[in-house]
Image (cartoon, rainbow over all chains, first blue to last red):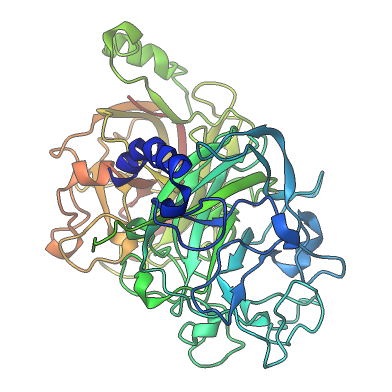
Length: 317
Length: 231
């Protein structure tokens, strides 16, 4: 209902912004605004910060986080963009098939985040893949990277005998950021009907990110119960569609990992990161069930675009 | 093994005239899976690849499931589970289940019936069909429970009136409180609001078989499913 109200109010808000931009805040610039939404990223990559999100953390000394993709390192050469821990990995936005309107009154969207499997290289027998970002990065003081350079990874990642280097959030110097000014977020997304169309959008905080120390039980390299983020599953369509997610509906997957009782995320506790995951069928990782017909090979082609926080009403709870 | 080969659609059409009448304003039937798509995913993309396993104890040993072209209910495929069951302790109730979990929970509260076809072969003829040998379970792991039931225990189930007759049997079950109850009598697993609450966020459809073997008995369970619809 809140989302519907905001949707109805939006055209009036935009009109007011056009008439009185100074008092209204600029939707097309990073940083907090008071018009209902705060841009996290429009994926257009302006200002020479390709891959960095637009949202500026409130802590002035921290820098915006940047996009990365990841999957199991044994199949990291099967997705695009290739993960940062691959020899030639790195992030890039992609041109959308056809420019289209997202928020009323802003320029047409021409680029988006685009996670996909390569042609004839589906994923199989792994948990899936995701693309996402830390909300903010601290200056490097422990050897960790503060940009997606692919250099000087701080060795925080675990090496688990797979014969390849697995990425980890501990490769980066993310910090917890307070999201209590927001009630949720909205974005546009689509997925090719030829591949998997289900995603899980999730946020990791001190309970679920290994940097928080809880899900590792104090042993930094012990990440097997980590990354069960607070999330919501969505079934995308084959055209760009706007989705709304309230923090109050984001819960952990009850089936695995380090978790508390099923409670929604508490944005005031802070958050490290956000990602959009394409999970493979759960039977692949289910230890007490077999997949009918065997584990499926899964292709996907998922687009995420124009991501905004939904601001809490001024004076609201 | 005989198949009645009566397409479910015919059964539905004769049993409930007007069910598919678009002009009536009733919701269209929702096909969960007819297993004929050729891929491993249910037709309703809210649900994930079918899986199977044994319970009491939980294991995959001796349990397989696949798409079966040999014993179809309506061509070309059904899904087939086969499992070797051993009852080791009195009261343990070893069983098997064939199920699909949702990739994104689905609101089915606007629908009034579920229809499906089953062919079941048990190691021995159950002494009694009460309690039932086959249960349909609708899971809703994120629904509020009256107690602290873990997510996997948050469901309602329906005892399917399966008879020992050979061949395919088709069922249409009304989605009513009377037909669906908590899995046991303890309040801690009961969902607040019961079936209506669960239907608003269904994230699993399970078919569970408890062959009611005597202690020390063993044998194979064969379960085939086809044409699972909500309407």
